[in-house]
Image (cartoon, rainbow, N blue to C red; front, side, top):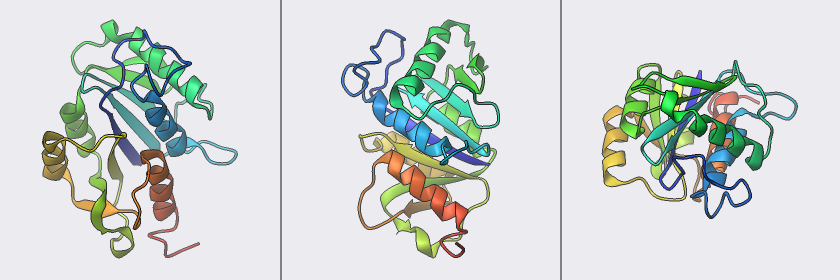
Length: 198
């Protein structure tokens, strides 16, 4: 299983946002939606061995489960609609018990720390960071949990929490990448067994 935890610092926590202004009024939800599509879509299929957790303003986490996903399309607007639908059900989420809001999509009343604590039980936490060790020097981890941030850097508290779990802090290349591009490169790194097999 491959998992991606993406922090949306300015992401909405209510469904009252326009699908026509994801980059502005929706707190750069466009970045998070691109991360979802990069994590799941192949040319003519969906990766089933993937989970994505979008942490919305450290208040809610919307999770996508590849084996159960339906109605996910490769565009930001329809992905944002799934997030908005999840937020419409936020009152149904009690504590850390998830509420399924559509097939393969669920919402929990968890912020970043609780989400990372939960997913770290199932895999090897890896922080993707431009100042990390070159990924080509590190063998692919078993059941990786990649942690990324949106257009903002990790806060000091987020960094400390990631480092308390992370086995590695890896860089995917010499240039900083957008989070959604980093996910694509991370998939290629895993698909090719650390760029050893094509």
